[in-house]
Amino acid sequence: MTSEDVLQRYDVLESAGLEEFRATVARFLTPHRLVPTGHEGAHLRGHVAVAPLGPLSLVYGSHSGTELDVALTEQVDYYDVNLSWEGHNRITCGADEVIVDSETAGIISPRMQVTMRLSDSYRQLHVRIERYALERHLEELLGRPVVAPIRFHQTMDLRAPAAATWARSVRLLVDDLETPDGLAAQPAGETPWTSFLMTGLLLSQPHNYTEQLTQRRAAPRPGGLRRAMDLIEEAPEGDLSVERLALAAGTSPRSLQRQFREYVGVAPREYVLQVRLARAHDNLRIVRPGTVTVADVALRWGFSHMPRFAAAYRRRYGELPSVTLNAL
Image (tube, rainbow, N blue to C red):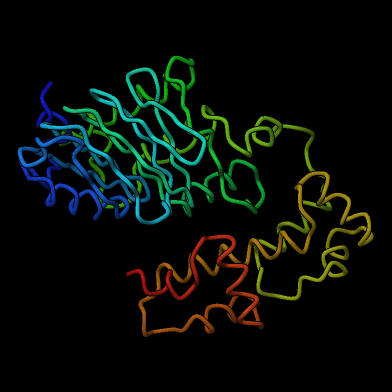
C-alpha cells in the first residue's frame, strides 16, 4: 500500500516540501517545529489527508527523505491516538517515552507538550478526538459529571485483545471512508463510528476513570438520589440548594450528601457546578460571536459571579469561556 492509498479521497496536501508539510499538519493538529536530522531535509516529500467525522477526525501524514525531530510549541487541547502505518515514532513527554510502531500506539492527552522523532519513510494516522466530546461521552457512560480531565496511559499495547480490536476498528473505518456508500457516508457531523470508537477507547485503554467505569454497573442508585439528579439535569440554572434537592429526594440533606458521595463520587454542589459548566460550554460552542456575551451565557446557567465562573470553566476545559465563544 502506498501513501496515496490511505484516505486518498481526503487528500489536503500531496508531494509537498518541509515547510508546507509542517504548516499543513499544524492546521489540523498542533503548532510545532519540524527539523530534519540530516542534510536530506531539502529533499523531503510529505503527504497529508484529513477525514473529519464530527468531534473525531482522522489525520494521516507520511514523509520520506529524512528522519524528523518534532517539538510541539503549544500544549495539546484534544486527545490524539498515534498509530503507525509504517516506520516508528518516539514520543517523549518529561520522563515518559513511548515508541509508536506496529505493536504500540501512543496517546497524547490534553495539556501535554511533547517531542517526537519520526523515522524516515514514516506513515502515521492520528485519531483526533475533541476533549469536550470524549468527556461528555464518558459522563454518559458513568452517569455523572467528569470533574478532572481524562488522562490516558501514554502507551497503548496493541497486542492486548481489547486494544487490538480497537486498532482494527480504526483500520476498518479507514477502509469504510474509501467507500462512497459506507457507514461513514453520513451528512456532516457524527457518524456511528464516532460513538463506537470513543466508547472502545475508554474501555480498552487504562485511564484515571477506568476503575469507575468498571464499577458502573454496581448497585442501582436510590430512588431519591435519582430524583435529585433528574431535577439538576432538567433545570441546572435554578435554585438547587442541598435543602431543595433533599426535599425533592424525600430525604435529609445529610443523607443526600452521603448518597451523592457514595454513588456519584462528588458532593451535590460539585455535581450542580459541573452540569452548569457543561451546559454553558455547549451554549458557547454553538452561538455566534457578537450575538451574546460570556456574561449572558453564564447568567443563563446560574452563574452570577463572572470571575469564579471563568476560573471554574478554565479548570474544566483548559481555556477561558471567551476563547470558546470566539472559536467559530
